[in-house]
Image (tube, rainbow, N blue to C red):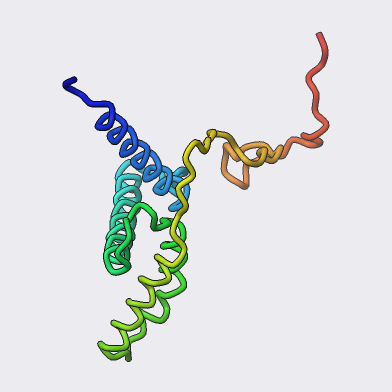
Length: 159
């Protein structure tokens, strides 16, 4: 009685959205592999990804508001692609204010023209689409690295 089933379902739905947002950060933005070596630089790398993520999300919110649709149906990956395509046009030095406004409106339309379809009951298994290549890992500097010959044909001796 204190916690109606509809409220619990709505909270679970919002939790699923948060999981999808984490996937956007890790996979779409490439934060699944950190490239920096020192803790300070790793913090900066993560911070820069979060700043970029929040800026893109802000643009998605503005575009959804202009198109009068829910922000959850605006594709994050599609928004990133649209922003990458429109950035050279928006970043020109000699552009008038009215032209910049028109370009931003066109960017918003590009971000919202193909909404994400809701597919209830769809399963999203966590798995790799492709197998990793059978190469050894680089565990030492390149000039010290020794390649294992015929790695693909290597089999441990049967005991």
